[in-house]
Length: 277
Image (cartoon, rainbow, N blue to C red; front, side, top):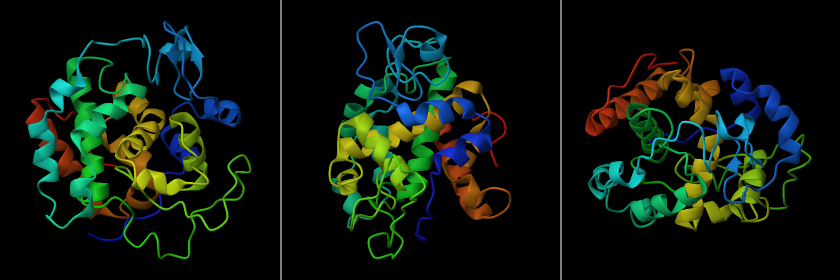
């Protein structure tokens, strides 16, 4: 598999897709862990409340608007998960790291994942998440970005002063969606409950944290796109559009689309329109 590219610039993602950019600018510096009381929703950016700003589009957990009662574990069966990871070579480090149990455990923080909208929307979101994870990790073969540990690039953007980079730490891609950059490790760690800036390697050593980090990025940047019905192509744009979309890396885009349509077929749902970016 070719080396994974640096990605996940949260600001560019939101601006590029037109999703709640203004809210990001106003809330990101003051973001909090949710840990909401019963009856409160956790908003897209980690705030607790009960009105539509919290329980509407982008809601991560709690009584989110449009919750359909679907059980993600009934859709992501062991057979479905094994059908992905079993395509990775036996020597892959991820084969003994990524598990369905870790994925389901990670959902405890993100109850809105795959449970908002119609049944078809739920299945499309699940198919999309696993399509991107398949592409990013090579069927869950790789835990870390290929060559990330040896690169001279620490993936540190010093302009994000609220998330200062720790000495001798590198924020290259790790986990199912290859979380990258200090401005993602910092808030992801705060939300999940680990020190993302001082211990970014936790995303590569704790499988539950690894899936939580991927879901943290997904719920903030991709989940609203799915619920808005913008199509799989928009999810590619949100995850790595700056590198791949607009004809820059058509083979990689085609791979993502192929995985997505395959998983949609397995889950018995039409993939929808606007598949490519």
